[in-house]
Amino acid sequence: MTRLNLSLIFLGVLAFAASLLAGRVWLPPAALLDMFNDPDSLAATIIRDIRLPRTVLALVVGAVLGLAGAVLQGFTRNPLAEPALLGVSSGAALGAVIAIYFGLAALSPVTGPLMGMVGATAACALTCALGRSGTVALVLAGAAVSSLTAAGIALALNFAPNPYAAYEIMSWLLGSLADKSWSQVLLVLPFVGVGGVLLAMTGRALDALSLGEAQAQSLGINLTRLAVLVVVGTALSVGAVTSVVGAIGFIGLVAPHLVRPVVGYAPRRVLLPSALAGAVLLLCADIAARLVHTNPELRLGVFTSLLGTPFFFWLVVRIRKVAP
Image 1 (cartoon, rainbow, N blue to C red):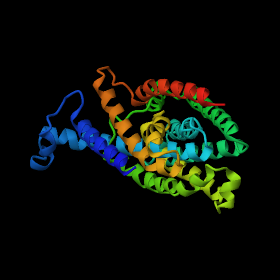
Image 2 (cartoon, rainbow, N blue to C red):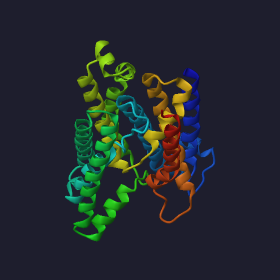
Image 3 (cartoon, helix red, strand yellow):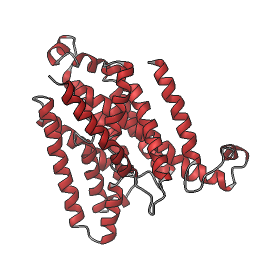
């Protein structure tokens, strides 16, 4: 496990450096030193003010989605679970869209993330309340909640006060790390930090829950407390990042499955590697999206969906083959 974590950290460092250099205008590796030797140079300004906040945000968002996906898969005992599948991402999207639609996002930079977290909390709580009878019911409840929030978003688009508001909502829904600043990075970090800690605290309980609810309770696990940690942690972390970068899917689904065969199937052992793998995946996806020369730039949410959908299909087929 330690070797895997070190390998993922090494890959993350390489991807981080490549993200600072890659783009429409490629920068030489020596430009990284210009940030310290010549901070007023054009290359240093591009890296410091444009690419570095985008790269840091990609690192944070990827780690959050990977960690949340691993926790939700362990909590629901469903390998197909992820924030988007259970309605968390769409709930956060609806909250942020409401803030944009009613002009609340312009009042304060905190309004968007707060509304996103409120939407994510409501969606996650509703999904868990409706799907308490089992994992199949939970997935169906997540699909229902996702449909409900999608209808709310469509309603906001239908009654958008002007074409510019509709365009702003649609552009945000596609998901992107472009044009992000340090203020947005600093805005989400406190919420991500608290949510990430809450999710990391679920490791021991998830290990016990893998034996079954009755067995977990016999081992002293408080299932209500576990559910609260999962719901609040996911809402804070995923809600905050979704309200800033938009909807980015499949990272939370793919990352845990990439590391699980290496670390074993104990949920606690999957958490940290999933966060690291999610960060590496999103950094690489953002670099690839920048290298596809389109006008306007290919949205990151579209790119991850194009890459993640085949993996989802493969995972469904694989589960059907091994299922009794």
